[in-house]
Structure formats: C-alpha cells, structure tokens
Length: 231
Ligand SMILES: *Cc1c(COP(=O)(O)O)cnc(C)c1O
Image (cartoon, rainbow, N blue to C red; front, side, top):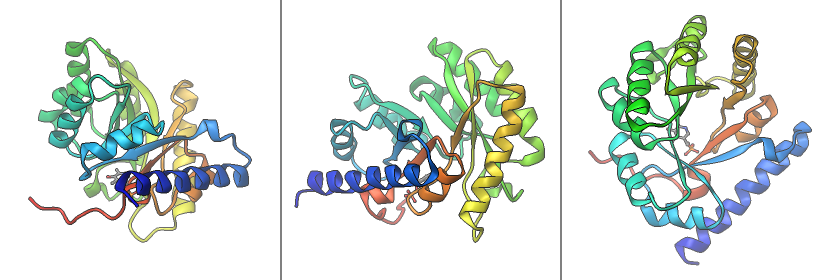
C-alpha cells in the first residue's frame, strides 16, 4: 500500500467512526467538522488529505504551521492553530490561520486581534478551557472563561467561536467533555453565536461527539504515530 492509500484508508475509518458516534448520539454528522492535525507530517500528507475532501488542517507550532500555510496558499485549506501560543508569535499566526483554538489570556487576545486587523481578516477564536484548573498545558481555569470570552467578543478582528479543551491527564473523557459542554452553555448564554465546541482527539472522539463536540481534532488515527520530537 502506498502512503496515500494508507492515509485514504485511515480517513475512511475516521469518517465512519464519526458517523457511528453521531448516529449513537442522535446527531447529524454535518454538525461535526473533522480537523486533521498534521503536525510533524509532510506537506504531501496535507495534500493527500485535501485531495480527499478534508478542508480543515491543524498545527501546534508556529514555524511548521507558517511553512505549510505558505506552501498551500493556492488551495482552499483552512489552517487552524491548536497549540500553546506565545504572545510574540500571535501576530504572525493571525496572518495565515483562519482559526485559533488555544486562546487563554487577554494579552494573546490583543496580539491576535492586532495581527488579524493588520492582515485585514477576521480570525475565529476558541477559548481554551483548563477543565481541572492545571493551566500548565494551556487553557484558562473555568472561573476565568467568561472574561476571556468577553475580551475576544469585544476585539475588533476576532470572532468568538466557542470553547476548546484537552481532557485532563488521567480523567474520564466523557465526564470531561460533558463538563466542557456545560461551560459552553454558559458562554452561549451571553454570546449566542459562539456555538462551537472543539473537543475530541483520536482516542476519544466518540465520547466528545456524545458530549456535543462540533470540531474533532484528529492526528494519529489519520496519519499514524508521530515520530519522536527532535529539537
Ligand atoms: C496533536 C494534537 C491533537 C491530535 O491528537 P491525536 O491524539 O494525534 O489525534 C489534538 N489537539 C491538539 C491540541 C494537539 O496538539
């Protein structure tokens, strides 16, 4: 099997898993976006996925994301930034990303908004929520979500898309994503258009969809185990 055939087979399985999870949850599969997380994988894999109809791609490091975005400028791919983001790189990220999933502080809001305005575009921004309050992997604690959401909603150049979370280490995935769904409901009370929930990865997309996820961020199940980080 060629690499492209392998990726196509993986994609078919992931799409089937999403459909099955939606059927089990009584949801329309059209309400769940598959975001392919292509970090560490070559541009050829990005182009394979794009050729198979995947429109949304995610990266977690600025340099790699910027390179891939530049190389795909002529395509319809929408780039999503899903990783922890340093404030001094935010302006640059805003020049190529359509969506940022990891907004967790007001200085980042200001920098992303400035970058989006410079680029003459509107950037979609998710508040990353730290469900267990351990903010070392990014995310704002639940009691800070409203302030961050309000800052995004008020920022010229940004659109508040909703909330995002990673499951806390060792926590039950379904319970974690149900908690995120509660946070999402609270945010929507003040910001009705912010109806996105970015939740679910290769290992737990079924639980995430059951809890209401609208964007699953899938890497390993599409592209395989990542090579160890070299840097
Ligand atoms: C890498 C990554 C993913 C994808 O994880 P897999 O387990 O490979 O599917 C999702 N979200 C974020 C924030 C990531 O960094």
